[in-house]
Image (cartoon, rainbow, N blue to C red):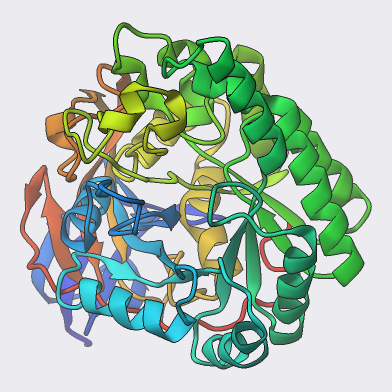
Length: 471
């Protein structure tokens, strides 16, 4: 009889397709058997009354990213991947940002150096393209896709990041030729600048005016334009962090017309609203992110987007800055106008408990959909499946044990990130990851970090299969 390094015994295994009672046998970091009475193992993990889920994959996080003069992101790879593990995640995909005038290779060399030996969970990088020169598009990008960097992100807003429509088309064309997955941040840059200038002239500079500077039409228009440009080039795209019905409906219409357009939403659009930005002094800065949280009708629409599978993935868009810090949310210029408040909120550890509690426990989505939105679809769309994102013989033993009944009040000390707050402080959730295992090694066990830094490894990826992740 085969012997195992570890057997997870007595739990309920859940994948995107099935739910069944069985034991999981693990050897050399991989799942080697599913069944009952698997025999001896060096370690037995008792999973009675627990759900045995594929480890979460968060395909939208920002770690150690250049953030402008005097502004420092709160998480590097060590704290960011540690926090991810506490939240039941086993793989994260942060963004390697190409700064203007920099080649993609230079950006990657710097980014790999920051990650080397620091990670608690596995990682892969998306590329952010800000300077799509002929050299970058003609030579670098095709070679890098060949090397396993099979996804890239483009911005339609932000100083120094926004691409023109022509640049978007040129980049989409290379994505189509190389088979890379293209992610789009869809907000209209000129409209935001126009509204921001108008608000500032009227003296409306507090953090809560951030939401007024990027209302729903700004996101809807850019979503429609991104879809139209992708249709011209015939390339699949992922519209990231969708916050409202109007943008969701643009994606739905594109899908109904047979276009390969996918959508992503995030926890902030399910449980926060623009009212959270409207707090005394600078406290509202804690909730400044783009697109901003909207209203209750938009929350309902984002749930519909998940329920009806208009959205393929649920990510955190973890983009952390410290609040009580002049290099973070309280940057001196940020006190003069919302325009200068660092944009982004932490969320990698709270993504899955929020979706589990608000989605599964409250009956909005079923467990199999939870697994699809939290892990399987990310792996399929970004070229990691079936090594990641499922529980199957041959897959990596990336597993999160969940206590589906545990009630937790979210507090920052449970998060273990580099930030000094969580925007979800005080939110009560039911269901919590109690053990996180990456390639057969336990990283977090019942609220304690037990895995060594450096166990997490970098993952080159395959090209996503044509039509991946579409409902």
